[in-house]
Image (cartoon, rainbow over all chains, first blue to last red; front, side, top):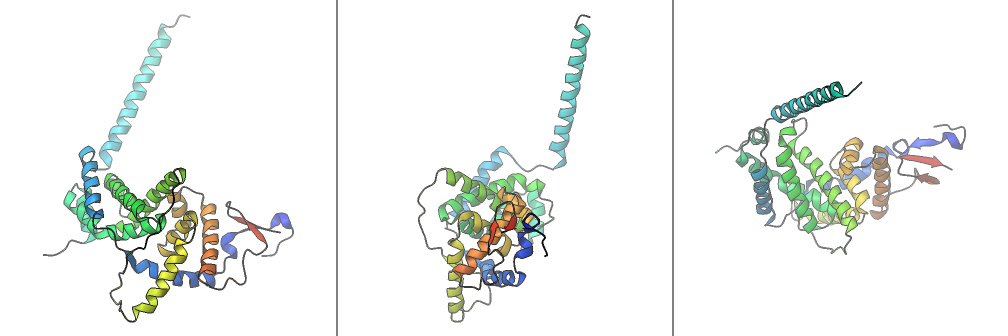
Length: 94
Length: 202
């Protein structure tokens, strides 16, 4: 890329990195995609136990219900606040 | 007995079938652990991260829309949990105990004799990756091994996209040196790279 001066020489890193060399490196790293590090035998029971604990406090529920409830709660709280402010201002003198 | 496919298990787990969720864990936890060990470079910390991953997955399963494979989604959570754990670890830094990982080749075509040389190459690659600082290692693993986009890496690691690109550039450069690959035609020779994602030529 031609440049006119130091101030115009800000270049994105990805433009400069040689694509061929990157592909070569990715090929070298490819074995890591298929290699598995064997976990300790106690890991699976530990995971399931943690999930058990978590499930006592919450269980995945359909996505729309809690969001809808949250919106409704927000609207109700806003309306209540507005009513309260309106009634207070009516009571103020002058 | 036919084994249910992963999509069916995800669907069932989202509907509250705990057995289906446990089966997802059984099928995926080795891969999740592998990524966690590579990110954390510590088996004990990786075990903790994996447990956090599945608790978070369990709680967030209703938000999983199936746009990507469940494995990819779990990898994203792993990257995020590992980043959180690394930040915590950086605050309570302790001496790292080097340990040998039990490495298993998951490829069906793996042959013990022909695999000997490949295994040596793999351990060299593994050692080179483990030799990187954690913040560079995370980026190169997520990008070049797990095909995350720069945007996804930035999101999961809590950094800017530009910083992710710069870290990737640095990580690749260090890996090439460590693996004895050509670093000629150095793209950043005479240039200062900063984590804002740009190179200022002198």
